[in-house]
Length: 238
Length: 275
Image (cartoon, rainbow over all chains, first blue to last red; front, side, top):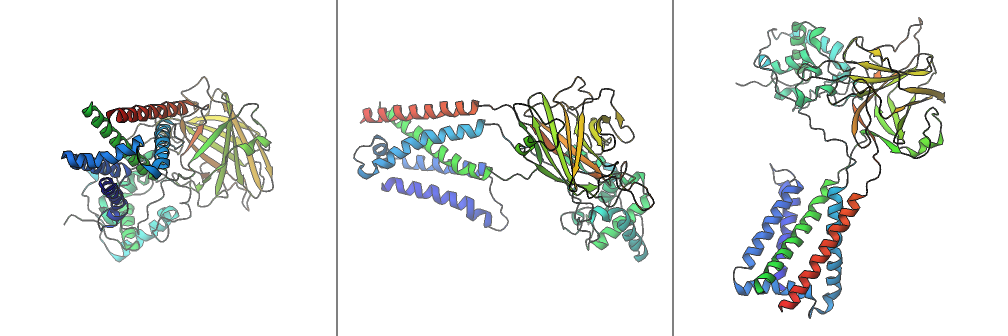
């Protein structure tokens, strides 16, 4: 079984590497199973090509498999052979069932959290001077209008948040307002959930369309208060 | 003969590798789903259409959803009594019955609850189908029950201020209060003659569903605390009525297994002859 041992070890080692080693390399991520499958397929194809390069290696490679399948002179492996012959059709049946049975899972939800804003809301700068008074006033507006959902600690855990899906944004999280420009927040606060494009799933968002209730100046002050309170800075292009 | 045998061997080798990789690779697909859907179990025999305490309900799986104070538009409310609702459903292929359960410390004449559904193919905003700025939305169908009315009202909305009772009332509801818990049954035919305003329930299909509850308690000066837009609401979740059992997958699996068995048989015969 020498000629077969190496390919089997190689396949197992490849799988273990892809599944457990590669995701732990800094900057990497867990591989989707479809990609692991593709890599294993390529590995198997490589092995077959390599092993069938010469007549000699071909016989050494296929010979043991052929003997195993036909059951000639394999002695103690006979039981394993029957096991494989029974298991293979069962596996094929199981896979077929799995791919044709109807799923109980609800439709997949893919929602873009920060979709692109309309053109008129890119690159606007905050017209309100960044003074301690204005920041304080912004925090006061935030406490009155925003904190019930986004939280007194700017963490998205306000008392009204629990039932909402998607959950209110956590401004202390570095992937929310810290990677957005002030003009983006101005758009999101002004137009609210109903202002999102289709990839943002506007029908699910509870965010009010504040332009019908608050003047622009208050919104700009709220933005200042949010960044200050969450200890974040707006993204800039400089 | 020899090349054919070699070919068969290669096919077999490839087949084994493919199956092995499929088995190994498919394991991570079976991820856990949170409770995001109400499922109506298919039953034969009568549905408990107006009995919140019927034994038949124990055969339905409850799904629990968190509630929030309504904050999307004024008048808002900061705090609500009901924090969660549990929903079960049963259907018999013709009618559907929902059981809504929630804790409420007091029974009041103005206690009320509602189901909301998207109607048709267009997405509707969960706040009464409020118009969206970049997406053309559809209407919502609202089934509203109030304790003192003792019945359901079948309603339609497409944006604020458009909520109105329908001309055709197709929904029934009845509530029972005991031990600090409301149990309310809503029922309707799966389909109606008015698909433009009523949700049409096709077994096997997922439909968007949301919930609202009003605690009818009054404050110190006799004013209702929760009324109109001041209510507990949920986000959109899913509802699905179970489709009749479909055994075709078992048949496909049996055919595939038989083919694999035949393939093995032919292959081994060829290999033996080749030698």
